[in-house]
Amino acid sequence: MNPNQYRQVRLEKLEKLKALGLDVWPRKAERSIGIGGILEAFGGLDGPALEAEPHTVSVMGRIIAYRDSGKTAFLNLSEGGEKLQIYTRKDALSETEWEVVRLLDMGDFISVTGTLMRTKTGELTVKAARVQFLSKALLPLPEKWHGLQDKELRYRQRYLDLVSNPEVLHTFILRSKILAGIRHYMEQQNYLEVETPMMQPIPGGATARPFITHHNALDMALYLRVAPELYLKRLIVGGFHKVYEINRNFRNEGLSVRHNPEFTMMESYAAGEDLRDVMVLTENLFSEMAKLCGGLERPFGENTLSYATPFRRLTLKDAIAQYGAIDRARLERSEDIVQLAKDAHLEDIAKKSPGVLLGELFEHHAEKQLLQPTFITDYPIELSPLTKTLPDNDLFVDRFELFIGGMELANAYSELNDPVDQLGRFMAQMQEREGGNDEAMMLDLDFVNALEHGFPPTGGLGVGIDRMVMLMTNAASIRDVILFPLMRPQTARDETANDADEPE
Image: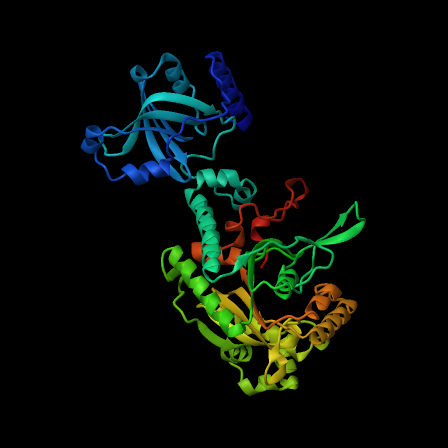
């Protein structure tokens, strides 16, 4: 039977339900407790205990199993990834309610009021005394035993993915708990949660290609934010001591198992602190989230990752030397860096400075090898236009990136607070834009003006929430932890393309 035939049969059943005088789309359900609450409160009681002290409950859910035996019917209801069995008897219900039971389909929503019992097989069950019809599923759910398997369809129709794959629902429940856990942790560290603009006249805070929109009333171009950084720093200038924001960012970049153009980050800034303070904040944050998700040892792919503190620390040059089997001394000479870039077959070498090439050599040799939590420090200044330089080397900056599972999870700076130096770096970024780099930062004179009013030493941090959830839930793709990842419209898709398998 095709979907249209299923739909027609179910529409006919809906008409029969209406003929019984029911409100087939009621405004409110009878519900005294959720299925999860029933399992938690009564899951440990055996049959005799339930008989000795009867418990009446009203519970609602979606029908995911239906077994009709003539004058009795067993149903399984699902809610929040949990399921509960319902036992209905013709002689225990009104004539209308029994007719409702006979007209039910998989996927329908109902509410049941009754007493808890154990069946002969020991399954916790509600013995129905009243049935309320809530909603008819006009289209069938994915096939009972195999669920929704097609990855692209799962991303497009996440609602069916959540219904048919309970582990997916639990992933997103855990994501919500992680976000709540992050907020709790940051508040414990005396950070104040704030909100900053998502539409900005000048995009800043990261080297990334922005999305552009237009404000009609003001007749001006606006950019979806690539990062909240410059606004959060303005708040430090304004007198806030510690601020953080869990924010949506938008970068006009490609798709991969680790990249989505719309993504979630947590950024924080603390006046009076530097990179070492932020390291402690960061490793403790990840350690606490691992505990929240089950323990300091967490599986990721074929590996077990340990979030015990302190995390490993390694300079960028040391990482290149170690994982690229390169003589560390060669990374101190510009001509050797260029040759190493040629040996690694990097692109456009002649157009890039030795600092930029060092960053690409790190990505080539080391990044994917960093499985256990590792802080990489001491980055070339070309890669970090908003960061203080090292005390003894003005070609490198006081920055770390945290790598776990072969991917970047966090980025942190001892923030640049010299407005003259900052303006010079903005001008260098503008020259890069004029040279064709559309990911270079734009000149934000208002931000420089804010710094000129006084900006204290500050430690800044950005954490990729989606990737953190990937690690904590052992998800292979970022799309597995974003409820509605970006997809091509189906009507415009190339038949040979597969959105679920974009190159990394």
